Image (cartoon, rainbow, N blue to C red; front, side, top):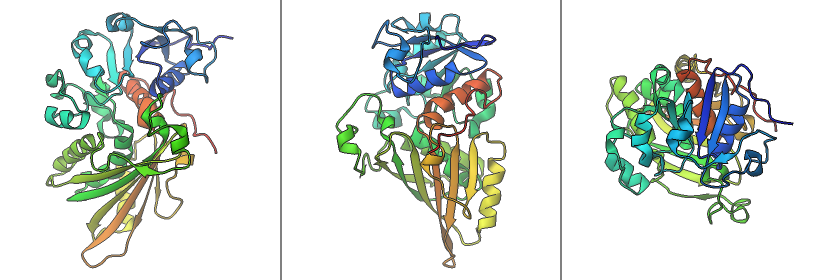
Length: 363
């Protein structure tokens, strides 16, 4: 039986680069979207093969992987998702400028504003640095909802960046981030992509935990960039820096990020509750667990758009308190494809949670 496409879909979407795990999630979510029909999926691998030959969770979709130019892939589309590796999307910049379709890029090629920072963290010069001048909107709906609604080009955030920023952004907006913040975040193996490498090979990961790219992960600069902007908008200084240590965990999906922040002694649990609830009152997918209930954990958000946020606050030493903020999300959904679809909904004038509001898997 063929997978049912929406019979009353108002919009058409294409996925460029659809054989990876991010592409798989885009395909899964778009196939079930009530207002958007997935019309085309391209790839340089598995050309002419049906989608379900690669993504075994799918049934008969009626679609095959096509190897066609970007202009042809985008023809007659309302939105185009780029599921390409870092360093590839940026090479398409001139073609992207000519498209009438809205574009959402899931790579890191258009998130940063500083070409030198891009070169440092991505290991190559950006071929079109003028693209970093602000013409791409950063696709974090909790912070940039109105800008995304008006955008034609959206650079969707990284998975670590989403988890860490959602835990720290309210603090930045209220002047509570200053100096270095320490973050340790553990991630599942799907974040490393569909093709096995020594660091992601199952026998070396299944019963193992290790750090990688300590203090130099490529999501660090986008976190610093966005949170510094929030600090400046709040009228505070920009001494904030992030010391980020990623951890490879024996999971397939999920990120658990824990950040350590020194806050003034006057900050108490009631004030933190007010800050987080006020800032995320209209956020579709952020659950504030606070400090009195359960702590954020991956199993409660797996397969969903939900971000769980909890914290712990030490007693005052007379000058300051130690605040620990923890967030959990699914790196492929809210940390990846689902967040891109969330931005698409805003760009197309649809309800922000349409097609992506299913509960998490349990257990």
